[in-house]
Length: 173
Ligand code: OFO
Image 1 (cartoon, rainbow, N blue to C red):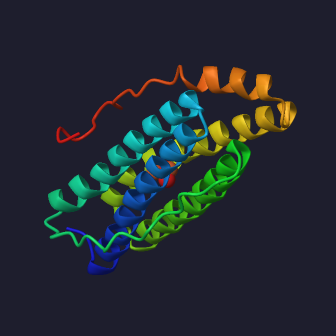
Image 2: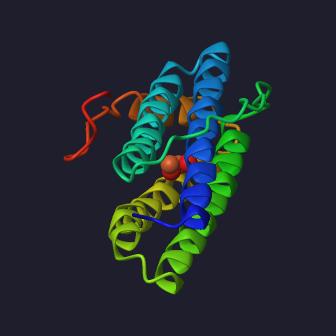
Image 3: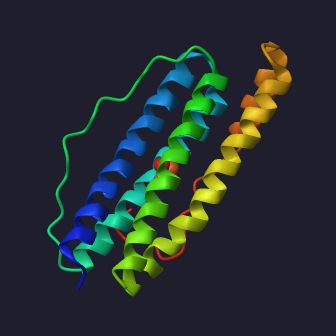
């Protein structure tokens, strides 16, 4: 049993995770258009990870007896000039997500909602990795600047990223 206030806040965040998925799927398409197939792979894997995040919230709310509300999806940008720009926007977006997760965790503590605290713990840890991945790529992209060869090397590395289903992921993924 969770409070209506907590359920509404979690539901709102669930929609934001879906927005993240759309944002990165669009970046995958833009990368493809730029000829960066590795980056397109990286963002497609990121899209799939965001769908896992979305389903984790969905399943938690359903298991708490909540009828979820899906918000209308907001259009996502689909024009970027460089891969660096995409990663700077990705990092800014993930920092927003981290703040939202921290606010939700704080609310769960204040409401003495232990189940939601435990549920949110996974996301607290996940956000460290999300931001760190983006910072690493931004640093590499800044190092190579607009050197095409350097960008293609980074693109090759990004092509190696593989989607793995985290343990405990809801079966609908
Ligand atoms: Fe779901 O972590 Fe990114 O947005």
